[in-house]
Amino acid sequence: MSDSVYKVIQLVGTSTESWEAAARNAVETASKSLKNLRIAEVSKLDMKIEDGKAVAFRARVQLSFKYDTE
Image (tube, rainbow, N blue to C red; front, side, top):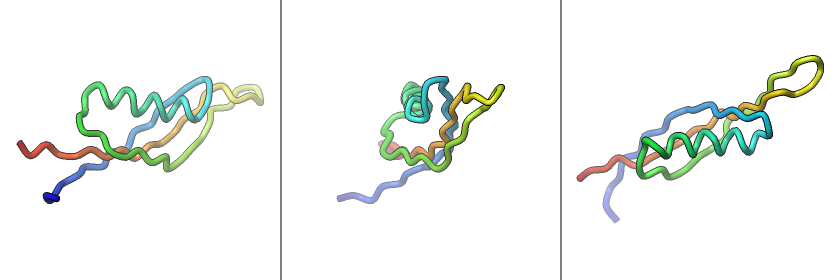
C-alpha cells in the first residue's frame, strides 16, 4: 500500500425534507466538482423554525477526499 494524503473540508447541506436529505445534498453537490471522495461524517444537525414548525434541516458534514498524486 502506498502512502496517501487526504484533505478534509466542511460543508453544510440543506433540505426542507430531512437531515438525511441535507447531508446527501452536501455530498452529491461536492461530488460534481471533487474526485476521490472517501468519507463523510455528519458533525452537527440543526433546523430552522418558523411559527413553531421545522421548515428547513441543515447537516454540517466533514468530507474527505484523496489527493491525486499523478
